[in-house]
Image 1: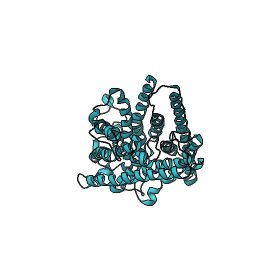
Image 2: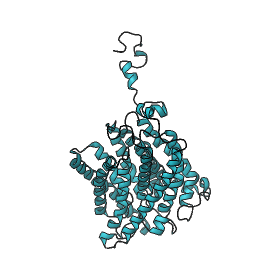
Image 3: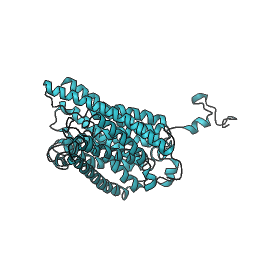
Image 4: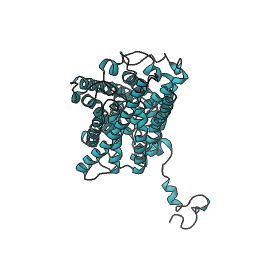
Length: 434
């Protein structure tokens, strides 16, 4: 058991790293230079708010007892009655709540009020994420998606990625398009940051998927052997699905646009990881490669939908997380094996269409639940404190407007001739502004 707790400590730290700093770097690099600090701040503040809220009521709502949608929020209020040796499992699930909420921010880059985000985050976590986490992860007989429907979701295809993708789509539509969307170039300002963030997300994802293995605590030989087998399966599947997704994304990108880009490689990493998340323990290696390849190809195509359909999903939360989450969740119905964690054969392994139906129903419940309630929350904020910054502030840049800061102090550097401190020439000196 000591080794298992050490394993879970590392897994939990890895998943927390996925938000701060990995997601902050990934999204920050994809943003424009006048928006990068705000983008990163949205991840950091989401971590702080959701982390405290999860300990207060989130754990109780998710794992406090039976319930179709959620458990009693007050049963384990502030972890009352939870033994300290269980805190590591609380912290592990807390990091899932944090990353899910932070993922949404990529859809609203450049234009959402920071105050609106600070209000949206705790309400959304309480009303949308905590109940969906109970439906999926609690897996009691009463919990809707795992228990009553019977859909498999190893580490969060529905509760995390479909949930965040739908919420991002709703917010993007209600906020409206960025000024100049579809007319002006809105390129990532620092792809080095994005590539670094993608690499850190990949590393953290091993905590996400492999850490989701449930060990009962019985240390008999058979149980330990099963734990080791599942560890190897999820680690290998996570790795190989990601490899396949990178290659598929770059191939589609090359066919559609004539270039294979670094942004495409970084996005392919995330698409593959998203898709294998619900299926990591359910499929064999062949299934993992197939899921990764399908996700990489479909997500590379899907990120262009926003221009055709007219919604401004700034950093492709819909194209990657919603589409990738759907791919991974639904394809379990085809590629699941009875040797996997769920013990169910999918359609391609002679199990019939039953598993596929369960997976589709589970995905539809997540879409409907997240979509409707996110819209209610966002509309309430829109008609009270407002969702969007003024147009002139958007032109100037959300970093300056909302935080009074700039990521790159280019004006000072240029006006001082590239010198700083005591060596910088006085503004009264001849040639100072040359």
